[in-house]
Length: 479
Image 1 (cartoon, helix red, strand yellow):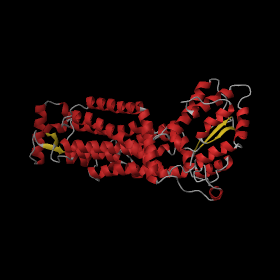
Image 2 (cartoon, helix red, strand yellow):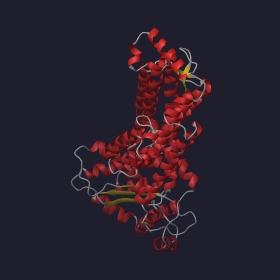
Image 3 (spheres, rainbow, N blue to C red):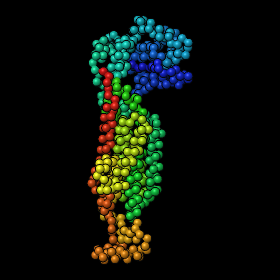
Image 4 (tube, helix red, strand yellow):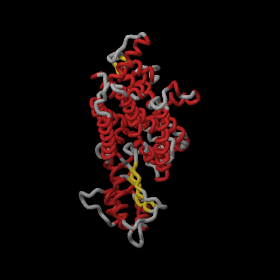
C-alpha cells in the first residue's frame, strides 16, 4: 500500500497571499493523486493532511466525504474530495480559531466504529488490522515512502531490520526516471531551442568566415583554425547542461536517501535523456559547415565528421555532468568549465604541436578532450586522399619575403634551386601533400577511428565518474 502526504511545514512563515500557496499545495496533491498513468489516487490507501504541524485528517481517500459531512461541511457532488479538503482547511486557517476544531474532530472521529470500518475496508481487504498513524509513519521512513502495512509483525521487521532494498527493479527505475526527465524537458522547450540556436548561429558564422577554403597554404592554415574552433565549440556549447543536476540535487538526495531508486538508475537515465538532443545538434552543425567550408571526403567524410561532432558533444556532456556532481554552485561550475576547456584547447596540439610541448606538460596533452576530435578531423581532411597536393611550386614562397616578388622572379629562383639541388621540380611540382601536413602537425599516433572511439570513451568515463560522485556525495545512512 501507499499513502500521500500533504503538509505545511511549521517553520515556513505564513504568506500574505493565500492563492499562490493554496495553488502550490493543490498542485503537489494533484500531482500525487492524478499524475502519471491513470488515476493514481485510486492506488493510494491513506492520506495525511497536516496544518501547522497538526494532523487534520488521516485516513483513506474514500473516507473524506463522510468525514467532512459529519464535520458539518459536506462535499458537493462531483467535486474532487481532496481539493475540497484543501480549500476547507485553508479557509479554517484564515479564521481566528484556525483548525483547532478540525484537529479535535479527527481525534474523536477516528474512534468511531464507522470510520474504522471504512478505513479497514479501504486498506485491509484481507481483514487484517491496519497500522496506527505512528506505525505507518515509522514504516514509511524505513521504506522510503508513506505506506500502510497490514500487520504488527511487518512493522516490527521494518523497524528493526536495516533496509537496503528498493521498491522496483532496476529497469523499472530507469524507465520511470527517463520518462520523468523527458517530461521535464518537454515542458521547457525553450532550453533546447536556445542551445540549438547557439549551435546554428555559431555554425553559420564559421561557415561564412571559412567559406570554400582552397587547397593553398593559406587554405591549409585556415582549416587548422576552423577545426580548432569547431571542436572546442562543441564543449563550450554543451556547458549549459551544468545546472541540471545542481537543480535536481535537492530532489535526488532525499529520494535516494529513502531508497526510492538506485544511483546507477539515475546515472543511466540522465545519459539516455541527454543523448537525443546531441544528435540533433550534431546534424545541424555538420549540415551547415561541412559543405560550406568545402571539407574533403565526400559522403564518407561527411558521415565521419558528423560522428566525431556527436562524440565531442557526448564527451563534453559527460564532462559537464561529472563537474555538476563535484562543484557545489553553478557559478563555480561555469568558472571551472571555462578554465579547464581553455587548458584543453591550449594542449590540444593546435597552438603547440605535440613534439614541441615540454615533457613535464605532455600528460595534459593526452588528457585534453579537444586533442582527439581535433586530430580526428585533421585526418579526415588531410588523410582522405594522401596524394592530394596543398602546395605547388612558387606557393612555397608564400609568407616569406620572396612571396612579394613578381611571379616570374619566383619561377627563376625556383628553377635555380632545382638545378642547384639537382631535383627536378617546377612551378607545377607538388611540394606538400596531406600526409606531409599531418606529419608536420604531429598527428600520427592514432587513426581517425581510434580518435573517435577515444572521444566516445571519455564520455562514458565521465558518466562513470559522475556515478562515483553520487555514491560518495550522498551515501544512504538510513536504516
